[in-house]
Length: 208
Image (tube, rainbow, N blue to C red; front, top):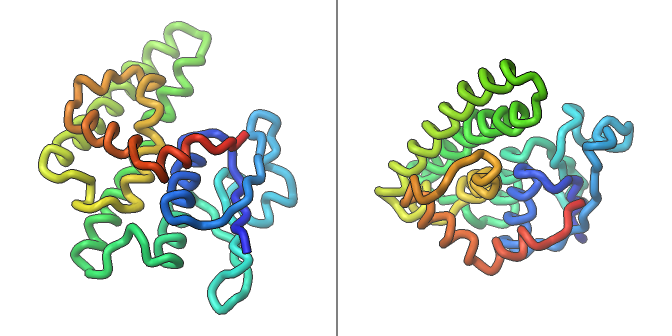
């Protein structure tokens, strides 16, 4: 049975569409128009109590019973466990994946997300302060990623759910006002990831 994928066309939504395509899972898209506050609808809150997209409902969950999962990092981990794909079997490898997944969830998402916000602030002084603060941190995070990818082909060594998570936000690098040419290892990784057929399908599917 197809997984219900409740989402919108955002970086966090794209993480999951890429993972679903890469893992070859059947799914149906249920758009949640966050510009119209549909994320606050009672139907959606039943599966995403934090009123954020994305969320999934897997009718064929553990033990054959349905399960709902919210938070994009948790969804990626669930899908990896369900399919046995894009997550190592050894503890050392798992630690590497979880490090970079948490790095994305805690920083490389919230910080560029603030850049998105302050780019739209009308008050010039407020906009300037916010952009100086969050663009500096966003560029620092790109630098951390660039250094890591100078050592390994993918953030955890092999392609993993951590790459899908980070890619969702790197996809918006132009909106972050970041030129990937300034981060050549990230640029190499980004081009490699975006050329993957599953990833390409994940970005092509309509989410809104």
